[in-house]
Image 1 (cartoon, rainbow, N blue to C red):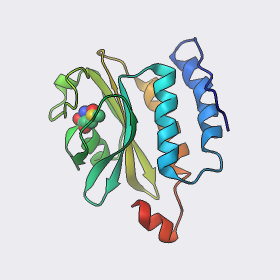
Image 2: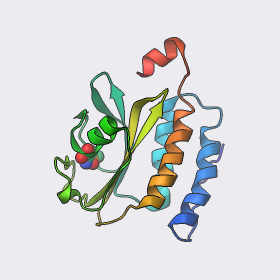
Image 3: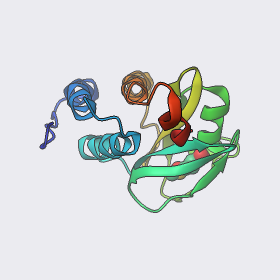
Amino acid sequence: MAENLIVSDGNKEQQYQTLLPQIESLLAGETDVIANMANIAAALKQTFNFFWVGFYRVKEDVLVLAPFQGPLACTRIRRGKGVCGTAWEEARTQVVPDVDQFPGHIACSSDSKSEIVVPVIHNDKVVAVLDIDSDTLNSFDQTDASYLESICKMLSATYPQTGHEAFLYY
Ligand code: SME
């Protein structure tokens, strides 16, 4: 397992290209999704120094805060509410250039200016979302969406497939 993260000093694309294989090796052989979320959040924070990066997990009818890096955050978000609840309901990545223009945006921090939320889909269901907040406007684009979706697919692949353990996570 990689112990020191290598961070490219190139452009965003190069930074993601350096990061992805390291995330792949961090997740290799680890089936605990909380541990995997924790390392993904840390690796993204260390690479990009985002204001806030973390996960919310679907627990019955609500998203519940999971591993994150950054300031304290709201613990529960209902389906369809805010950017996270919308990504869950629509099962689709949300790129928000200006959070003030997103109807129903939930402001965990007034410092958050732009946001991207990517659903983690397992067995055709949204099981979690990856939420990243920036303290500047227009921080995220299709490059982020595409690489972060790849990271969420890697995470999804570490979820248990069937049986009792799967029940624990859902
Ligand atoms: N802004 C999010 C809430 C979560 S925090 O940003 C960490 C939303 O509108 O769903």
